[in-house]
Image (tube, rainbow, N blue to C red; front, top):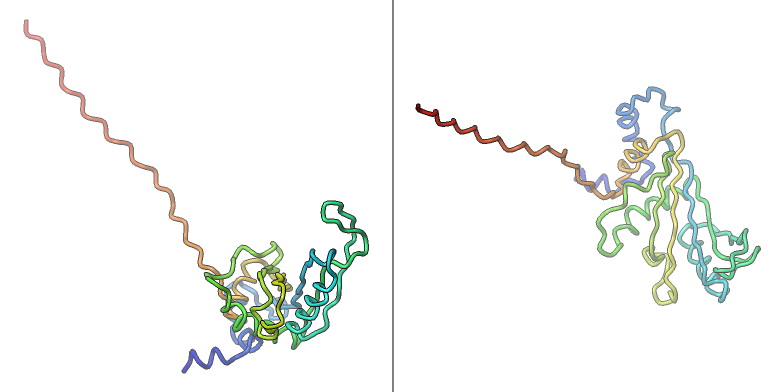
Length: 211
C-alpha cells in the first residue's frame, strides 16, 4: 500500500516531502537557500524543414500538444553552407514551462514517457552541465500519449533541459532522484590493487669447498 500511495503522488508533493532530507544531507540550513526547479525547456531541431516546411508545422503542433503550451518557431542566426541554411530560416521550435504546467510535464515524463523507451536501462547520470541543470534527449516524440501514432509521419527528437536554481550537480542528482527519476546505476570502480611481486627464491647455499 505504501508503494501504491507513493506512485499516486505527483512530483510537486514528492519534492516537498523529501526536500528536508536533501537539505540535511548537504548541510543546507536555510530552506530558501535550497534547490528548486525553476523551469523546463523543450526544443526540437528540425533540419529537414529547410527542404520541407510542412515537417516543421507538424513538429510544432506535436510539441505544443506535449507541453500543453503553444511552441515558438526558432530561426537560424547564422548562415551555414554545409547545412544549406541562411539567416532567418525556420529550423526548429521550442517552449519553456513554469509553474503547474512544468510539474504536469514532469509527471508525464517520469511516469509515462520514460518507461516507454525501448530497451530502457536508465537515464544517463552524466547529463548535468556543472551548474546543477540536467539535460536529456528523447529520440522520438511518440513516447507521449498526446501524439497519435496514426498521424505520425516523421520521428523527431526532443531535447529537455531541467533548470534547477541554487544547486550543484550532486544536489540536483539527489533532487531528481527524489522525484523517482530513473537514473542508470553506475558500477563502483574497484580500486586497482598492485600485484605483489613474486617472492624471490632463497639463494642456494654455496657448497663449501673442501681442501
